[in-house]
Image (cartoon, rainbow, N blue to C red; front, side, top):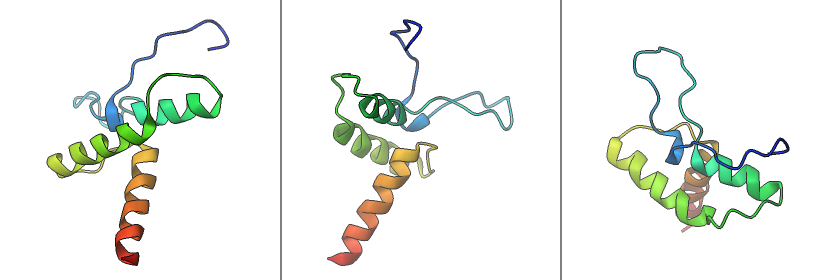
Length: 85
C-alpha cells in the first residue's frame, strides 16, 4: 500500500490454494484483508459484517474449516451467543 499497490488477490475465507503443494499457505482470506485495511483506516467499500456470514455458509456447506482468522473469531462469537440463549 505504501508503495502504491492498489489491487490485491484474495479469496473469501481463504478458500483455495494449490492441492499439489502440501503445507502451502494458500490464499489470503478476503475477510482478513478487509479487516486489516479497515484497521489501517483505508476505505474499501466492502462490509466485513456481510462477508463473514457468507464465509461461514461456505465453510458449513463444504464441511471444513477455512483458514480465515476473522471467520474463526466470528464463528466462536456465534457459538457463544447461541449458548447464552
